[in-house]
Image (cartoon, rainbow, N blue to C red):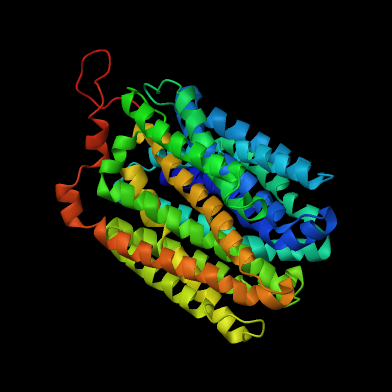
Length: 484
């Protein structure tokens, strides 16, 4: 049934509510990390796990959740995700120890994995006009950036006024309202022919992400040459190789690696990893710097990031409009230049860096990040048939979460290992190695955005749909795209 414009906007708003709480939860916890560490006696690696337990599980299950929604129904899966996410949030607020908090964060992520790809598939199937869909994705990108950048501000208010446990309470009323609106406005939909389940592929992906992240986070503590860490890196390499080899042989894989033969699709995935790795590392180091080095309260630290939040509200709709009119190349160029510039400003960070320089840095970082989401998502969902939008958007969402997990792990470990003397006196200088990493990520976004987009790539590269057609035809013998 065709929906009116008003009804389509109501669906968009409802789906964006789920994105808001998932994105907010990605970053609101960052500002609470010092308080969590003090109350639960958690080391820096424990604080990293508080973030990565969420992003890692989310990344591991997004593609499964997307294909499950295509099979069982997107509305039904969406509501189940909202319920599970809200339950996990409540349990996190009651966690008696770090171990329980990490476990409940993983439970939260299981519910969260049912939200983003499913909501995006609902949007893609609702907005069928390419330009209207690009603008809707621009709004979607605004909510992603806004929620993640606003997290430290809201977190600061809650931690300062109530305590760190309150950062999880905000999900409960928003989740309840989203459930009511979903029941009222969202129509049920499924893929005409959903993919078969791929349990082996799912296990291999989890093994790769979990072993790699654990090895990076715990490598400094256990020793990079220790048998445990070396063994985990070997497991990660074997799991990655196994994933590629196994998925290439399946007629309906969980992750169709042939899609990455498309330069725009592969480029968008790599850019998402780079952008969100930069964001994850930036927020992690920035929180510890402002509170543990500068001595700011959680509220004061959160307010410092307000310019970044403002930029991630203003610019994503503009980026989405520009993507719809001119393609992704200009937006990615702006994003790469701005993120690179912000990293350059941070290379001189000290324990007495002026407020003006910090605010300029946060403003520039938010500006760059505000331009990157729309081209990433549009490239992913435009490259596959709309009836398989759950899987397409899951790839985009997975690359974001993988990037954030690796950013927190790699940049956090690099900076922590570089601390000399006391944490308070040595951490500012130690962050420089982290900012060199974000500088490299910004340059990578700039280069990838120019190399993998444009008319030449569209004309000569294998598109995602063409790559999908390399699969065997469906059982009735038609030469149509195999359902994914």
